[in-house]
Structure formats: structure tokens, C-alpha cells
Length: 363
Ligand SMILES: Nc1ncnc2c1ncn2[C@@H]1O[C@H](COP(=O)(O)OP(=O)(O)OP(=O)(O)O)[C@@H](O)[C@H]1O
View 1 (cartoon, rainbow, N blue to C red):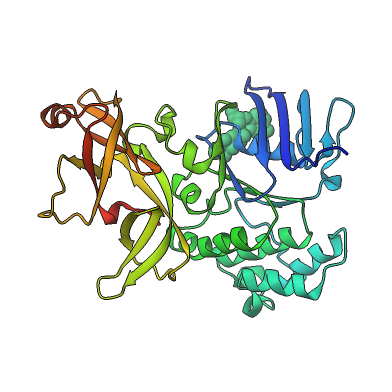
View 2 (cartoon, rainbow, N blue to C red; view 1 turned 60 degrees about the vertical axis):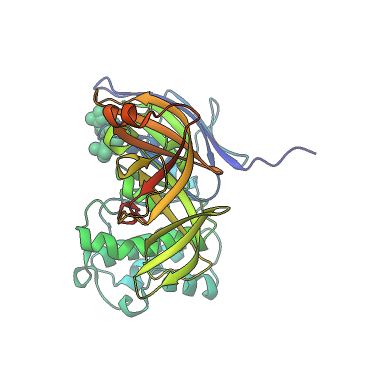
């Protein structure tokens, strides 16, 4: 019996007229949110367009959960690929209501959609009260929510999202992020999510593909890739790590929540209303971690974690060093001055306390 293939295998080589070259070979998971991350012009949209069959690379092999979409002998056109595509700007039909726009997707779905699935999508994206409105009566964030629902209702095998928050202002972005988080937790459809925002990655990506000038710089689980200080996007000022923890206590008086990140490693973070038992993600930037040799109880900093120095490396800034720390099962990085490292005698194997400001944690 053959093994079940449960990933997305992609190999692409493409040359554009302007000498831009995309050269990628990756294996992406068939579940969760994969962020396609990189600076402007790195090839993120081109990658998505190749996945969708909107570009035809010179070399292209795409295999989705064992199903071949593209090889040297085969090129499935866009309409035969089971994808939903959400663009930067919601491209809704202006002459149709939100309901009419969704009906368009229902007519295109390969299989009939149950009322239950339709209601689930409407509920997930909070669209019930908006169904009779026309696009010009919707805010940018609401239009984008209709566009996401429309893409989901065709029951795609993969949802492709090209910077869906880019055209929205900060408050509209914050309004839509909880809906995206809910999609990630509730639906089993894999999402390839183009972004150049580290915040968006922290908030809901599980896996990440990093592109630079058309080449793949890194690929892996978000928590691994975000802690790689050899990658320029996550080095220097942006060096940090991503931890996940379960809320074990909420202190309403102090507006703080206590999360357990590893066995017996707790952090106090801002209480965002997340219930006890639920999971939170926190990004701890190296610049927000300071070191002491003994536990300092005379400081305003709430989080003081015992740790052992695993490595000390130079930072891009000649006056700074990066101190890699082992904290039980987790690792943490502190970015401190060379002078402090020297005065404290920081060296591999030293026992220290890492002080993390609770306000520095991005949930
Ligand atoms: N239609 C086109 N014809 C020729 N070159 C193009 C075309 N579209 C994009 N390019 C070039 O291909 C390269 C990759 O563009 P792409 O849009 O994929 O990058 P991106 O990472 O998505 O950028 P951004 O974050 O700015 O959207 C760029 O050098 C761009 O100028």
C-alpha cells in the first residue's frame, strides 16, 4: 500500500522579462496557515500566482496532497485547481449584494454546499447582518470579510491570500484579525498567506516560507524560523523568539494573565480576555530581555526566568552581543551591550536570570 502524501510539494523556476528570477523548492504543510514572507519584490505574489496556475514557469512541479497540479507533462489551468484566492483589495461585484456575491461562489462550487457549511462560514466571518448590503455600503474590512467568505464557499483545497490586510487602515486591520484567527482554528483548509508583516505572522501563521529576491531563504515552523538571527528580517533589532503558552490564571485586578510556556516556566502577560485553558502566543524580542546574575526582587519587571547561557555571539551592532539562553525546554535570546556582558562575566554555561518585560510580549 502506498503512503498517503499529506503536504504541498512545490518546485518552481521562472524568469520574468525584467530579469527577476523565481527559484523555489519547498514542502509546505497541508494544514494551518503558511506565511509567504519577504520584502517588496521578493516574489511572494508571483509564487501565489504560480500556485493558482496564473503564471506558467519554465520548470514547475506542484503536487497537493498527492494530486499533481503541474509537472513537465501536465499543467492544470487555474479553473481546474481547487483554490480560493483573496486579493489585497476585495474585488466584489458592485451590482450584487453581499448575499449575491456569495451566491456567485455557491454556483461555482464543485460540490453542493450544505446549509450547515454556509451558516458556519457566515458565522465565522460575522456576515449575517451584512448580507443584504451592497459593496458600496460596506467598510473595507467588511468587504474583505465577504471576499474571504466567497473564496471559502467554493470549498477550495487551498486558500491563497495575498496581503488581505494591506489596503486596510490599522483599526480595520485589528477588526479583521480575530476573524482570521478563528478561521485558522476552525477550518481544516490550508491557507497560503502572503505578508510582509512580522506581526501578522506572529498572530496566526504556523509555518513560514521566507523569500528574498526570488530565492527561498528559509522554511519551517514559525517558532523555529523567527528565532533565526542569521536571517536579516529577524536579526538585529528584530531578533526574538516565539513561545506559546496556556493561560493558567487571570488577575482581573491587575489586568494580567499568567501563561505556562513550558513545564514550570510561567510568564505574566497583558490580559487580553483569553480564557483560562486557552493558548496564547508571545513574541519575546531580544532587545526586551535583560540579564541579572541573581534574582532581583527590587525591579518593576514581573518576569524573571532562571536560565543557562548556551551561546554568546556578536550582534550586527558592534557594541552589542546576543546571548542565547536555555530556559527549561525553551530558548530565549537577550540582546545586551558588550560592556554589560563583560561586567557580568557572561559566558557559556553561566547561570543567570532573564528579565522579560510583560509589556514586551506580543499576544
Ligand atoms: N507583470 C510583470 N511583468 C514583469 N515583471 C513583473 C510583473 N509583475 C511583477 N514583476 C516583477 O517580479 C518581481 C516579483 O514581484 P512580486 O509581485 O511577485 O513581488 P512581491 O514580493 O509580491 O512584492 P510586493 O510585496 O511589493 O507585492 C518584481 O521584480 C516585479 O517587478
